[in-house]
Length: 240
Ligand SMILES: [Zn+2]
Image: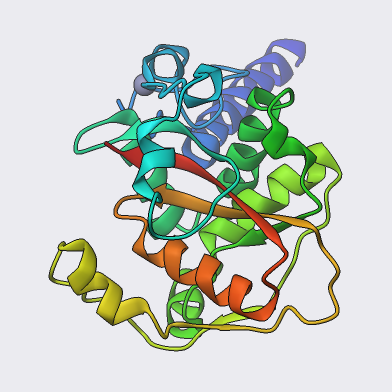
């Protein structure tokens, strides 16, 4: 009898282990290697392989700072990782945007916050995620920049601004990469409604910065409402 129970126990254990494997199998978002305990979203090798910009350590103006020169006044800019085709940062952003991975967004926001604890960017008054069109938000289930900002807000204890700026036009098909061509497309996209907020310094949070056109547009819309407000930018990744 006891052997029978032992056997039954073993069968059950194998069954539940197998089931657990099926349900909880977690693979690295970049290399597909099965993750071991403590590894989250990426294996250690891929976390290590994420290419850093190290903008936060530079004392001179970075290429990201220079991107906004003569366009709009930005106090501080920072982006943690280099974005590009086939890069580990792209695998993370793709999963965040297209795989319904909302907890990943908050996790990456917390991760960014921890890396930038000493940076002046962590001392702003409020966090403003780049808004996305409600149609996109509905299809995706969330705004990925808002998730990053939620993670930052949690770690830094800085309030999150929500729904103060609306994106007016649905601009999913921006075919031209020309900076000024895109600017025509996005210049009227935002409708700032920042009156009576009294924030002295706002940090705009984005997932990836490419041309900076959307951020320029958003920053201009905010400044049009409150010329005294200081604006800084933080994104997870930057396309060099
Ligand atoms: Zn990996």
